[in-house]
Length: 242
Ligand code: SAM
Image 1 (cartoon, rainbow, N blue to C red):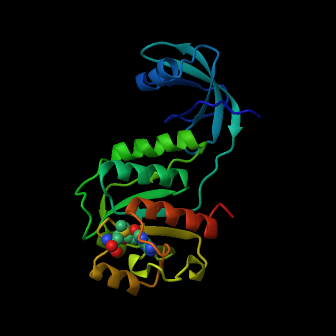
Image 2: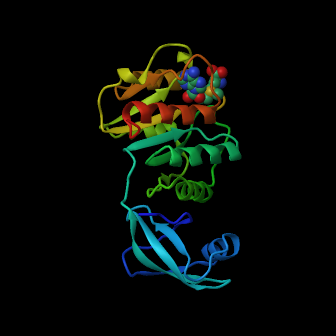
Image 3: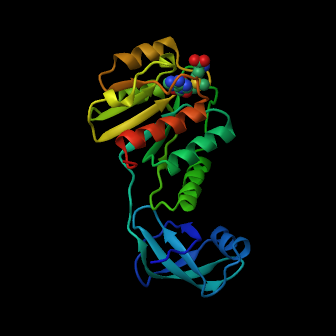
């Protein structure tokens, strides 16, 4: 079954025959930017009901309506994988969130570490980047982006059934691979800021029973590169790329 090329995330339950009213921004995107008109098709998804073919029934400058025809793809959730990353400069943080959504993170948690430069993040803006990435990559799932949390607080409240893969730059060049990690169904990845982790943070992380330290190869990667590399490595070894 062919899937409409233009995809739109909506906060709306999706089922056959449903009418979906468009916001002004959504109408502008579909009708002004993408030049759609009545009778044209859009693929809708809301993050949990799969993807549905919808037909434009009304189009205007301030809004419009779509009528849902049929499901074109089932809901496909990613593995239970969180990404914890230390925010860096704004555009590169945007990049990390966008790539995490494409690479199948189920939850994205910005963490404040001792050497993190960013004091705060714009959660709503980052969430919009995650939605846009899902629209573009054909996914039906959208990871939630959390507010900025202190790493120490996150570790204090760590769920005991979840493993944490710690990208430890001190292991640069070592052969500490993910393969050594125990089996688990719930996972998380942690990457640090441009300034790396402090000695105190490393000592604490390495002492935690749920942590698996890994190397990301013989070169020091930039923080955004490291997040992407760690996600790709995990998906290939333990995730939905196998
Ligand atoms: N300032 C640190 C230094 O010079 O050692 C580098 C930090 S690096 C720019 C940012 C983060 O990427 C690190 O905290 C780590 O999580 C990850 N990273 C980068 N290269 C890595 C490697 N070869 N092995 C493991 N983690 C790495």
